[in-house]
Image (cartoon, rainbow, N blue to C red):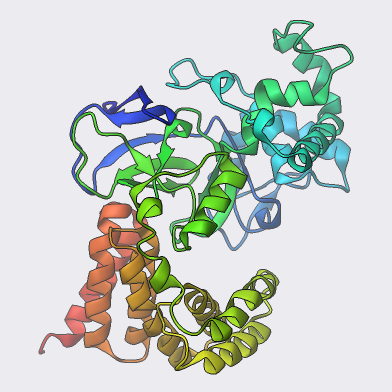
Length: 434
């Protein structure tokens, strides 16, 4: 694939990436394998550590008993990456390193690729702008990293050409993390599956140049651990390529706070300047939507523990209490409705799932005006519920809308898009007179 991007100095932002030539909406701009990546600790039992694909059954590494793979061939392909961490994982048993520690170690084990537009050493660690609490957290991460790396420290010392002022003797873990592992703090991407569910974390040095906008012209999707950058609007030659670092369905103050805390900058995009959607996102009586906002973290905790009955009971009660006083466009009501939908799907309560799903669609349409994976997936999900319940014409309409979005955000050859295309054909065949 020809390179369609170049590094440049973006006014007011520092480094950035821009298009060398024009890219149409739906165009694949660039893709990259990670310099280093790892499956999330909580998902090692269901996601292959080699290809990052979800599987019902995985074979476990007999040495570290942590990494799991689809099959023997997938395990062999991953061995060059896994062999050094395998020793560290084995020595740490029965304890397990955090995702950040494991990723930082993989970064240290991996030589920087010379063809990168942006090398690992050029990444900003943002240590100077971090709060004292965050610096303490990073220092603790460095201490844990040193313990984890103990079996490999002699080899690392030989491989790294640090000067004594950069790497004191004995090894200073924070200096080590600043030199090559610091980027793990704020330059990594969450790796997600085709349905935007988290499977791991990875570092992509060149694509870390992408700057943020709350209404970007590109989105990031993943094919296994490979990051794919796709245009969701027509991009002109020389135009900066922008993605959103966060879920933008939040009021301006919340977006600004998250970006400042996590990425250490203040967003000055048009959306933040106009605060155009804030009124709609907080519509309704505040005394009625505040309970929805306050309950959301607890509901997410129940969701993480797969306590679906508890999620449905609590979210259903909250939504009933807010009915009439809080419009469906309210962002806190939307989040609780999404949790209720998830719970219904997992419990097989299909009719109620459809009711909740339909209530979310106007808000998705409003808050994702450009093609966005989350909107396309929601249309597909609700369309499938319609189809399962025998509402074929309604299903066809929503699935068609979802396909038009996903063919841009994921591409027509993506397995998810192909499956959706087959579902559309099935619906058309059922409606077509025999």
